[in-house]
Length: 434
Image (cartoon, rainbow, N blue to C red; front, side, top):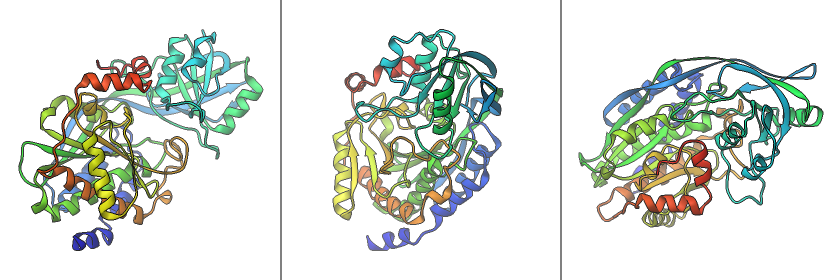
């Protein structure tokens, strides 16, 4: 064991690929930068010894940023458009709904108003409320515009897409503003008319997934995944350059351990995750779910030193993770709850065993993610190497013939979503598949 660990701990392959990705610049879904990032990932996987490396293109709704503004009184406040916002201008009374919890919308008169909500939830609330959920509560309430206020200090307006699978372009204009601008708007202009303006180009586009194989040529496979696209406002280092770097680094280690793999490991690096899990949805729709032994999806790795794995109620995945943690005497946090907001979900929603690999940051919400500050300087090579070692061992453990992983009945997934108070939010954003 020690030889491959030493090789992995001294490898620069993953980190070098991360630098390649962040230096490309704009990796927005459907952009030329996303395509170049996918091509670079294809080349990196081939270079580490993966086989059958290829791109799988698919159509995606394109959206290219223009300008945006929040005009209040005689001021123009700094803002950025949320991707897939419609290109339009509206004016309405500003209503600050605080956190924008489901209950906050119940008694509010929002018809024709511009609604502002925070990007986080209070400590006492028992679940995360996604941006799109808050947006569609505003749409349902008849709001004219949507302002998404960051909870992280530093004059950092947050981004993040709106829209649904059925209607990729949202119904009302949406912008992100910093915590500081949000506080200013709420203090000076609540109850006053404000104007939200978004200029964007909406067009047809093409994205692509990257595929590669390591290990024996079995029909069944463990999927090792990440997404290569990022929001256009930043380098996308943590979200999700680091995840793709880890896939490349783990693929390199697995190629050196192919004789130990009982099951094929199929690497998939998705496009268009940030605009509604389009790449993974494209793959999941085309793939025989019965051939997927497990999916290990890396989205949020590298930002903290300790891995945090959502195991979605699959006890065997929890056991395998604990086994690896004990084998290496290295902490790994496991969470059995469901997490429907990354590329594992198009499979897990139908009962396919899946893990969402993140990391402990100590911060609330996304931290630097989805802001201008998602840059390479927030990460370090040591963490990428350490986590790649642990995840390599986990993939080998999951691929072993001795590891039997039973799928779940989709009905039980739906029931757990209801029990964890996730179902209502999924319904309003059009993500409820049952």
